[in-house]
Image (cartoon, rainbow, N blue to C red; front, side):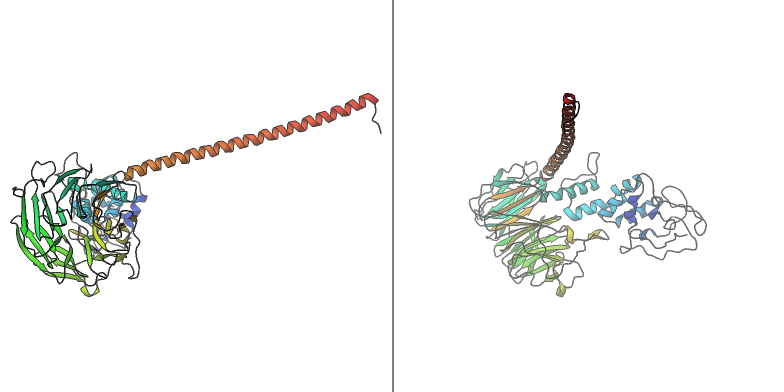
Length: 559
């Protein structure tokens, strides 16, 4: 027994909003759409990721297979009993919801109270959140006082708007020479910086105060990375200085302790200055001017694999089972398990490619080069290396781009021209398509000659901004001046609300004044009319009095 499946409009989910919110609504409000059984009708459409979410509902159901307990009525044509979309088996409903993006899932939640419950609790919200921002730090099992994934997603999406609002700047002093690298560990509210003064500085993100300074490493520090368990710094002396997190320590790491302490160790292997670092849950990644990337095992502290390049390695970014790197003018994507090269982007920029960053899913790759341009590439398994063209290009800088950082939907860059550019990529992205357990973005490719404008520029900070990092509501940057600047946008949305409230009050007061002025001018016009009439009456009375007085003297008028 199967459902009939006539033509289904793809915009049916959007039409749900036009119906009452508190009642269950049949699918697309069309009688023949997955609402009754028809023995002679057969569904020849397969359930796949390419089909429409509503078309996916066209699958055979067994008699009595319903969440509400009602059975499929026997009969032919339209004689069967109408059924609601929510009467489908729970597994099927969740599979259909899995095919929706965040916007469509939000529309479904507005249809009825039951669908709101199903859509709000759907695990798809977790996928949406993690694909954009990663797994939240310290998220435990579901508890009574913990937000749902939908609430976390909506809050973070709303918070991303703060970077177009007002901000305050904190300037951190402590370095004695130029700052070459900054790293923002948002989850622990810590900032790590290093530079020509050979020491790693740790700062409190909220207070802007120095927490600790390491002993001199004896070389320029060019790269820092960290997570909740490990802090790694490296520089021109070709070693990796590491600190383990100390359980119970108020700031995770004790970087001021002696280098012989059990919490610190060094990794040797590179033959030239280390220029970039990165971490994932099991590995440490380091890139060097010895033209190699080394992949280290965090548990056994040994080098697992070396990836050789043809030029100096400037930047790297691991995601999933791959690591992207820049060397010379080219960009490479490697498989970290077997060390094979999967993708090459030739001549990505005019000059060296200094900066690289990726989104959390790894399919969007951003590069910055000596030509002052920033380019976005779409990286997938079936990409053609010979035809890898940028999906979008920005040229916000007049000097080389030294650093890039990404926090959905913002790409932030720093340059030798002393400016910071903020780029919002949402307008270039289509809805992500579900494929097994991952979401893959589709990009609206711009013409090759088109140059997209940045959404915001931050100016006036000298020259040579070497490193930048972005978090959920802060941007951190360091450069040749030897200071660390923090742009704090945490109050931007609250300030915007207050400004909007004040604007509404001013508008209301302006309308009241105009109304009062109109009433006063109307009353004044009527008063003027009354005074003119009174004066006319008075003149007429005076004329009549003179007339009678003349007749009273002579009894007749003089000729």
